[in-house]
Length: 327
Image 1 (cartoon, rainbow, N blue to C red):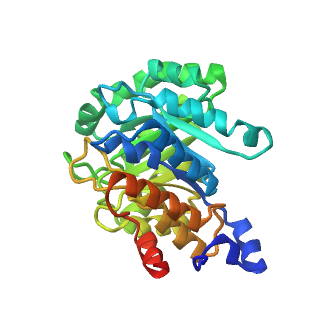
Image 2: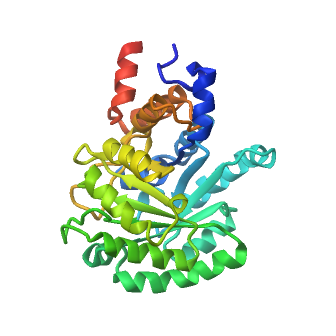
């Protein structure tokens, strides 16, 4: 039985409307979600999970992070996972399907490891507008982080690899409290100058509200084009869907990061419970007549699969509701 907002149930009129309102979903569960797990997920299980997401229509997937296993042991198999996923989907990509397999790279060494296994669709760098968070997360000041990224940026430009930039704590910091929108805009501008094609604005501890979100986005839009901006909300205070709705309807944002089953948080941000669940985002967007290219039922299946592996219920309210209904 198909769910109410499954892509197969829309009318012709809705399809025409959806084509005008496409929202790109960047699925970050395999990286941002699994990096926080205390248990190591076996490599074949990770690969199966990612394949399920791509089969569900997730064409933009953050597969892994090329960081030291000492820092994030949960993703120590980054090269094996990415290599297998790149190989698996090469034919479909060659046949014209636009699949972007992204990875996080903290430095040149991480970038080199990514390139070794063919992870060249897109790489991402990450920084913060909070000095304290930056020092705790990546062990350098805000300005030092920009300096570090120059070498990564240079190589990505030489190799023609699209570069994405993450900014943490855009609506609040666990150590410093409120963050000025002007600080976010300044950092975003510096990332754009480095060559980032897209800036993901992260509410790392989930304290943002729609009003604060809109104010921050309007400031960032003074230095970035709307199409260069993505939003990345955690649902710690239950505000994520409202913030996404405001970002799209009031500020024209068309790129949303989310994590299937609500996986993830941040190991360096106390109180960061988890990312907004992709299933909940898709249900809302399809209900608004927007197009994502993602099949909700298959997505729910992928979320339940990884939740079962982790031995806990999914954090997606939509998945829980529809699973109970079917049961």
